[in-house]
Amino acid sequence: MSNRKTGHPIGGHGENDGLQALADIWQQTPVAVPVPEVIRARIRQQERRMRVFAVLEWAGSIAVGIGGVYLMMNSGMRDAPWRALLVLVLLTLAMAFSVSNRRGVWDPLEESIRGYLDLARLRLVRKRRMLRFAWLLFVAELGIFAVWQWLSQFGWLEPIFVGDGKSAISWILIFALGMATWSVWYWWRIKSCEQQIAEWQNDSFEVQKNKL
Image (cartoon, rainbow, N blue to C red):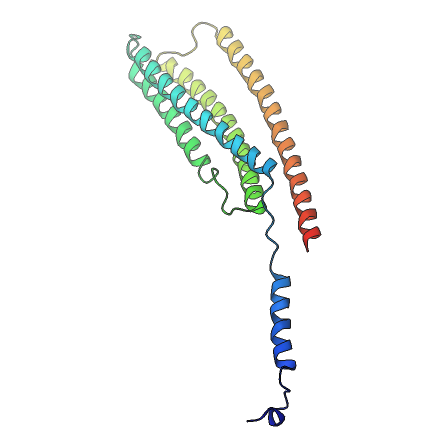
């Protein structure tokens, strides 16, 4: 069939339409912007810090677990096995949460600015979750101590707080005050990191806009 019969001149609109379609596809393709070194360095620095904290947590938990069980079993108390079991249960809960809370926060899902920023946001979400868990565990421990102290009145367990308990309550209040101070500081760090991520997001948006 000749070009005259088809109505398309040689080298005419058919080729131009194909080139225009390719140009439209190319313009719609997202521009690959390299990850700024400042973002990459900050994420890697956080990763190294997280690994150090994870090692210290495991080392501290093992030391507390072994030391606590040893001291309990050699204390001569009638309820020493129950106290040792309580130490192990609380440590197991804390470490199980620590492992699950760090899952998926080591590397970005994709090698892009968006991937690194999503990873940074996920780490902040996990930090908030860790802060909430720390307070829930602290409240749970206080509840266990209160129940334990109440059961000791029936002779089933030995009391945790001897005497009027003023000294123990004072130490608990001091610990709670220190934990509250740390929580406020930690929350401020999280908000500061959120602002930094927002700045990185705006900067990357400007770079992509300039490259279009």
